[in-house]
Image (cartoon, helix red, strand yellow):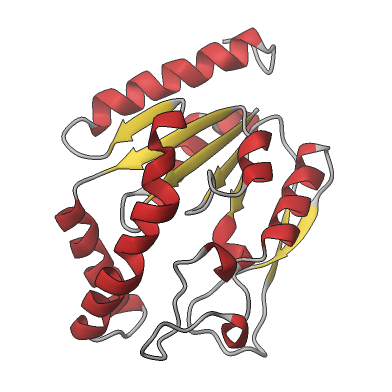
Length: 208
């Protein structure tokens, strides 16, 4: 079973991925992060002010991403260069992802990349209000990425919001489950795991 988690920046995709991997730890799920497929910075598109825009589908190596996911799905282990923001180009770390009966995929363009979406058995769209997303992004980018607040706001308005409106929001209605990452998160997580358990049982991935 391949579960796909999509949602805007700061919506809580990674947190939900971790919660699901802990919930289904007995299946030793494979964790596939689309962040590991960003193209080098010198291949990224620039906006009208010469600022790198990481929030475009072209920011990722779609062909390699799709090929690796298909290999993992077919039962092959894959070796991936792990993505670290601001890491020197000569400092590379690699991780090996082993195949599993349960694969969890997380990323911005999960639904936009047609072949990736077609590979999913169950899709989840994570939603939360925009102010919460922005606050999370500010905290993350100031602390771990060294951005100034004005830079974060610029990216939010010029890159992040257009990305969400053009490449994520149009696909919300096609998701199998909409996860509300707010005061409904606990009840939604319970409902989500019930849905996944039902699928696992139907497909004999495991007895539930």
